[in-house]
Amino acid sequence: MYKDLLIETSVTIVGQVNMAAEVVEILENEIQPISIVATKFLNRLTIDLDEGNVALLNLIDLYEKESEHFVIKTLEETADLLSDTTSDMNDIENLLMRHGSTYIISIVKTLEGVRQSLNHQHMAILYMLLKNTKSEVSQ
Image (cartoon, rainbow, N blue to C red; front, side, top):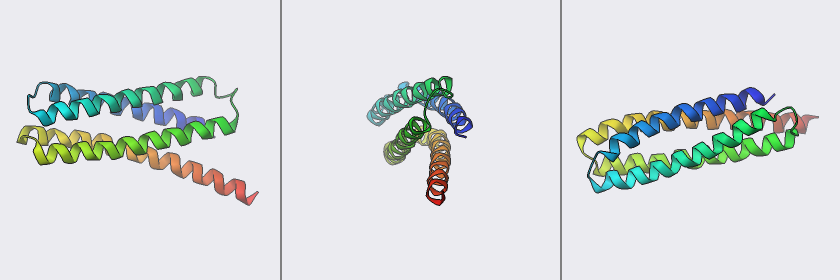
């Protein structure tokens, strides 16, 4: 029941980490102090996402052997990670919009796309968890 969601979440994370890495590469070439700060934040977020993705991939490999409780716990942890990440990315976007050059502000659109994609996946996980909770209550 959850395996497709785990796979979809993993694919989303990989795609968005790659996009964030492209933004980091652009920001690393900028000398504005705000770009340096944003780069450090984004690097930390991508490391967190990579670690979350490794946990998902391990769970996908062991899916048949793991209890549903463990799968749900991992999905809850992933939902928390995505929520924290999108919140932090929103802060980074606001920082860049306020203090960045016109060029830097133009690449914020990429970050916005990353954040929206991760937020969409976060909502998909929450929906599935809520649906599961409702079905348990009705039984």
